[in-house]
Amino acid sequence: ELGQRTANIITYCQKYFVLVRNWAERLRTAGVHFDVICGAPNSWEEIVDNWVPGTQIGRALESLREAMKSGDHAAFRGRVYRKYEKANFAYHKIGSAKTYLNSIIVIPQIQDAIMQHKAALLGILSDPGCNAISQIVFDPDIIEISGGLYYKLSSRSLTSCPYKPTDKGRISPRIFKEVPDKVDKTGGVFADAVKNSFPDIKEQMEFIVKFYQCLLAFQLPQKTTKLALVGPKNSGKTSFVNVVRGLTHPEFIASLSKEKIFGMSMINSDTQFIFIDELSSEIMAGDQAKILLQGGPITVPRKHEEPEIVDNQAGIFVTCNAKPNYGDDQRNVEDRLNYMDTVPLAVTDTSAPEWILDHSFEILLWMVDQMKKYNCYVARKELFFVRDVTDYVQPKITLCLPQGDLMKLAGVRCEAQQQNAQNHDCNTSSSTNSSSERVTNDRPGCSKWHNDSPSSGSEGAITKRFERISKRRLTKKRRIEESSEDESEE
Image (cartoon, rainbow, N blue to C red; front, side, top):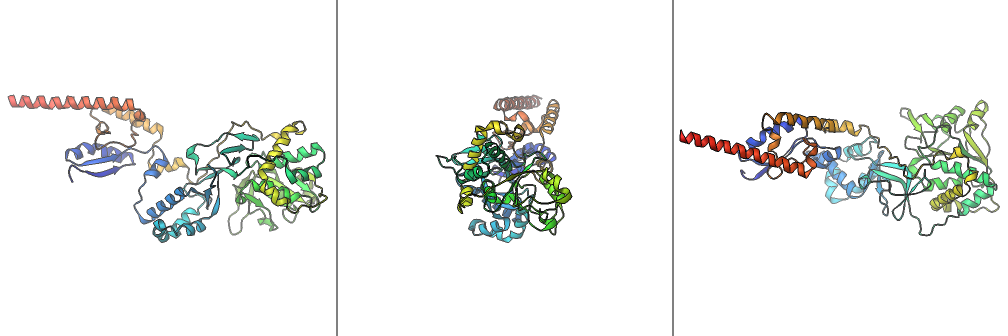
């Protein structure tokens, strides 16, 4: 009805933005009251937040997004993660996209919407390059621990929170660990096994530093020698790896199998740690071993799929009962490994593997204390990874379509485009009343984003602009009144 607010006009494209501004005066003159949301939004998030679905599949997708947001759930590479209950930023895996959808359809509010389009939603959610559901990224250098604390592996120390509040659900630390108030940093059975196999302090430090490097995913330079333990059964070789397992999500750990060319199929671009148990020519040919152990790009064959080139920067840990024989490639393989011999304990502790897994963070602190205490026995070249605690590099979120491309497709103008638009408005305002000047905040026709003026966020600038508009209107009104009086006299 006339006199009532009848419409919300939303424009994303610049050409429609200009048209609506030109219509504004005539519509209000005709008695049509409305709110106009005009101008291109500043960010992709602004478009998503203001998007109103117009189809059933769109509403189903929006229901899924809202459910995931309210439950602190996030997608990553076709899997769904949830935030640890006591963590601020750290997430852990719930399950596959299919399992997740089958779990949430019991919610009455979204059951009908999701059930009708379950297949379509599954295709969207399970796609590793999905943009409709925002993807989370994991930061392998940061461990979140209870009490709101954060540990930085490359600095070997605690650090302040490296994330902003807006990073929640977008960036997750490597893992979350609950740590008691009084931390046991003696190393327990792990330290006993290390001292048993390496009684000399120099050997101990060589092992500790090389083993610590297994945690430094995406920070290892190419051709960094990898730790390889050689020894009989029950000498603790396999138990040691539980430290890394306790500090890494299982889906980011790869192990090699005896499937010839498909033995490396578990390795992908997100792999943080590779465990090679019983290295031999049966598991990996000599040329494969050279390429994998030196790090860098490798070709990973996959069953029923195209081979994938992966930039391998994962930590690698090797165990074997005896040094493998690679014939002509023996020297090349050995140059990429740091062999160390282990010795069995006098009494085998069957609970040791589980204890090491449960106390992985305490063992990490013990190793760091040893490195700092016996720093003189550590080779400088092996501490290539050490960085200042304030030197933080945020992990990159990789998408099929970068945000810049999405913004262009959605009509989002960059700062340069906004500046050009402002200059154009300034040039035209001197000769005619610009329609943008008729759009104010205290009456229908106000702009929500004000992207036609980068300085519109300033309250002072807005006030001055309104004063100029009021003066122009008053001048125009006086001219009309004077013209009417002249006509009456005539």
